[in-house]
Length: 628
Image 1 (cartoon, one colour):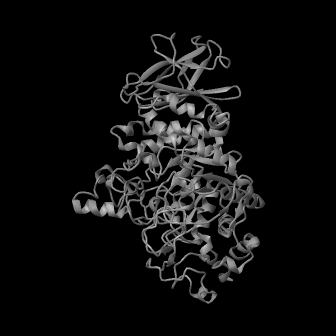
Image 2 (cartoon, rainbow, N blue to C red):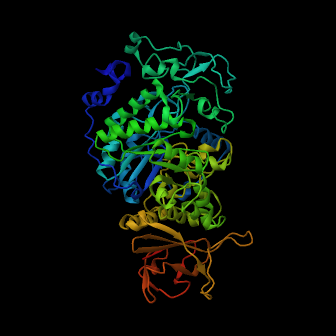
Image 3 (cartoon, rainbow, N blue to C red):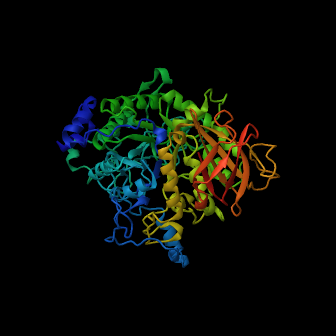
């Protein structure tokens, strides 16, 4: 019976879900989809860099202190302990390009850490078996679509993780790849830029990365020894040469059809089909991918997929996959299985791709991260960020409607394409740790589905160098040989960290107020405290860094909640802030329900007749406040 899962060829593709249930006895799909995904707070973690399950001195899933681990918690004395000599620094940098040891069991043991933070959906980087001869620790170089990479654990470990997450009210989104496989074959010529024509293939790569295997399907008699003596690509259906475009690597990332047909670096492009979206002719490779990912839904009770490199796929291919997966998930009782696409190439492309394909949401990785980060740091006009969520002729939508649940917002991530070759996290800038909470709060309390990139709640800075700088924004939470802050051997699951502690309070408030999850939002006009007559939107003046109160409202029905950050790092700032004229009467009061200055909580401010209606709001230095 095990051979049925070594090859999709040996089972009826139409019944793989039932076959998987019969053999693997998956847990019943009893954990429902959320009523509204915008109610969720996402947490994106890179599996290899999150936890190896050997930490000591953190709280387990039940809140008990773990004292059986071997890795102590980070202290400031350990900062830069991995780079004391040039030889040490070279070792630390090199470690960042390889597997460092994160495991599925490590994530399972940290579900309590995430739950207490206020996270209720986790997005996990790809778990699938990678090519043997490359350190594709990130998970995007798949060699076997039906196995978990042994660096990360086993299929049972994945199932256990999802089970524990569900028991704690946390949905699980798995990162998947449709556009390509790993580097599973080699061309006859090493120089293969895309030119619109297919190249000749020398052979499938073996365990050492040499093209010694025939570029054809494996003979069934060899399946008994798989995967010990082979590598290639699995299941066997993917060994059909027609599965691949074989047109060489992309050179021009903006030229169509090159970016759809070409290989993503050395990763091998899958041929999905041909034709326009409404008349798409689906190729076998895409059908195999659909069955593979249906299997994982049924096996592990997953709640959604984050789909990699959607820009590089045909619209028709993405639409077919979205339809197939949504229907299959609904047949299992998951009525709102979540499909979010990584769609590079600008906001307009992302919006229209989502509309045409049936994806539920797009990652906000284009203009949102830049405007989020530098608004909080005082180098972007607030309206540049908030206007992204307003009605837009470009999008032909009331954007507060579509952006509320159709974009996942973040400011740091594992790629940071927007920063080119000089990548670093938010906290890399001098003094940025002072407003690290503010950017998390702004992201959580404005429109969209907020996503926290792992380590942001601990103030990770992503620094180390400019050469292959991806590695530096992928530090290990559990320490190991490539810990954050240029350290080693120290973990970072510190629930007493001020950023973690304050963010947990903010996310708890969000969870209690539907207005903060689904309400419309408005950037508010301000006036100097000694004026109160001349109002205008906060903005940068004379190209200087803005040091100002930045207020906004969330409104749902007849309920308004007022929020504000202060971009002045060193001084508290006070301003008259406009609020909704119809929802408030002169003499009403708003109560402070959160402030980074705890003495301010429960204080009340009076509504006055200024610019319609306004209140006088004081925001602590580099602080954040909420009034209702």
